[in-house]
Length: 374
Image (cartoon, rainbow, N blue to C red; front, top):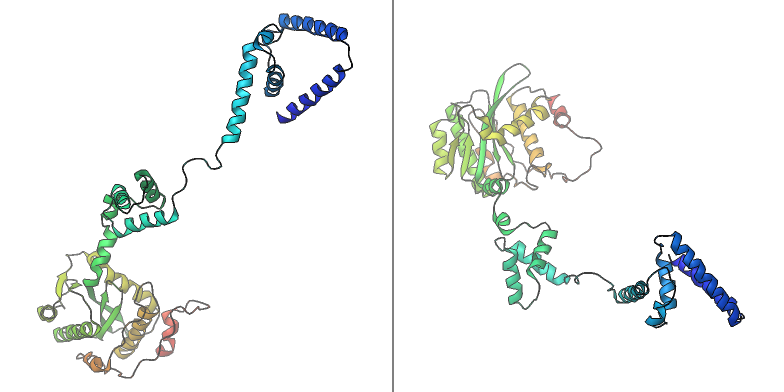
């Protein structure tokens, strides 16, 4: 449209320059000829079509004439249409000069947005209207709808949904008080059956290998219960519940030892292993990563391999075990001695390698214990 307007303006300017040297008689004759041509066109054309450039040219030329003179002119449009075109032209020009640089309301100050988000995170029961009221108390003038929009943009749900607790959060808050234990068996190279007793902490996923034996007697189980109580006291554990299955090897004396120490024993349902799923999952990890890849010669070899795997599992797996598990102190290193357990080594352990060390390939438990197995 602008290109056509410039073309028409240049054409009309040249026409005006051509009319300057003409005499009045010649101009009158040309005007009469043009008027007659307009009458011919009006008889042949029902309604003439004008584009934007045509309207601008006609409006700019004819707005200088009085309305009475414009009414007597022979035009393809009515004089009121010419005047309306002129008014629309002025409105468009005024709207173009008065348009704001940024549409809509000005953005909220960054400090106010940060204050709204802080109030929402620190007070989970406050809705957007309560936050709006607190801002008004502080002298900050902002609309309640603006507070709602800020919360929605940052993904903060309404107060009833924000104040509720999910199952994941509920279980995570209760994990500090939960322990789980289980007895599982393995086979040596000669086919002998050995039993392993392990305990896992739900909060940190830290595993404790308490002992191995070929004959899990009631006295051996009770002694491991005492060892567990001593380990928990030395570690400052806040566990209050111990989950175990209904194996007949767990006697009433074992439960009594734990009850005297402040631990409540919870037995799983009949044929419901998922009630002890945390322990069962670790056993399914221990079998393919260690027991299925290592040739176990005897009980001593099995206990040594399990101790190494315990150290590896608790220290080199930050997403499952604690980053720095407390070392076993020499004061109670000898209490892990059941009727069939070998004597323990009281020397200090070697410093562990950093868990974030990058390996060229994944080292399995079989690779770590292959030298011991041979």
